[in-house]
Image 1: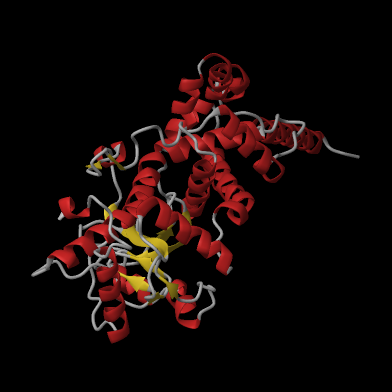
Image 2 (image 1 turned 30 degrees about the vertical axis):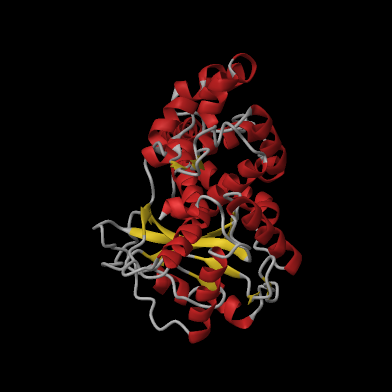
Length: 402
C-alpha cells in the first residue's frame, strides 16, 4: 500500500511529465506568428499579383519573364516538392524556386529574405541550396554541356565566322574572380592580388554569349595561365578527347588552319589556342590581327558581365547560375538581357559599350607568365594575321580601328 508521501511524489512526477510533454509540443509548432501568415502576406503573394497585373515588375523581381519562370518551375518541381505534415503545410515548389531566384538575383542576406517571404532564415538557406542543386541537375544536360562531337564544335565555329568574322574559332576563354568567405584555416590560399579572398571561374563562351565549358574552385592567387595549366580542359585538349574538328582551309584560301579557342595575353599560345601579339612595336598587320581577335573575344567579357550583374555568386551555387544564364540566353529573354545590355557596334563598326559595363563587374584575373609558345603556334598566328589583311579575310572597316 502506497504511503501518503509516495502518492504525493507520484502525483508531482505526473505533473512534471505533462509539463515537459506540453513544452515539446509547443516547440514543434511555429515559434513566430508572422511566419505562419506566409500564405496571406509573403512576397510570393505579390509575385502572383505581378504575374497578372505587371509583367515588367515580375521581370524586375526575378530577372525573367513569367513564361520562363513557369517553364523552369515545371522542370525542377519534381525534385523540390515536399509533403505536408500534420503540423504545418509544406513550402510549395513555386515559393522555393521564387526565393532562390530572388536570392541569386539580388544577393540579399537570408535574414532579409526571411522577412520578405515569411520563411525562417535557417529553412530558407536550406531551400536555396537544395533548389540550386535541383536547378543544376535539371538544366546542365541541356544548357551547360560541353560539345563532344565535331558537328557541335563546327556549329560554334560557323557562328563565330558569321557574327564576328573570325574563322575556325571554337570559343573564347577567360577567367574571373568570385569573391568568397575564406574556408577555415586556409591562410592566404584564396587571397588575391586585390587583397580580397576569391576563387577563379574559368570558362569558354560561344558566339552567342553562352557558356560551353566552366571550371570553378581554383584559389584566387593563381593566374589565368596557372588555372589553365592545371585544368581538365587543357588535359582534354592535349589528349584530343574534346573531338575538335580537324584542320581545314581558311575560307577562300588554300591555307590550312586548325580549329582553336581564343584568349587574351594571359593564356599560352598554342595551335589550338590563339592570343594577341604582344602589345609593343606592332606593325599594322599585327594590330589588325589583334583587333580582329579582340572583337571576337568580347563575347566572353560580355557573358561574364551579364552573369555578374544578373546573378550574385556563391561557391556552392555557381553552376546553378551558369545553367540559368544559358537557359535564359536560349530563351532570348529580354528580361535577362534587355536591348543595349551587351556590347554592340554602330553603323561604322565602332564599339558601343553595353550597359553591363556601367554596373558592377567581376574582377579580372591577373595576367600570368605564358611563355615559350611553340614555333608551330607562332607560324599559325602569322598565317591568321596574313589572312585578316588579305582580300579573302579582311573586313572593310578594320583599317579604321587600328
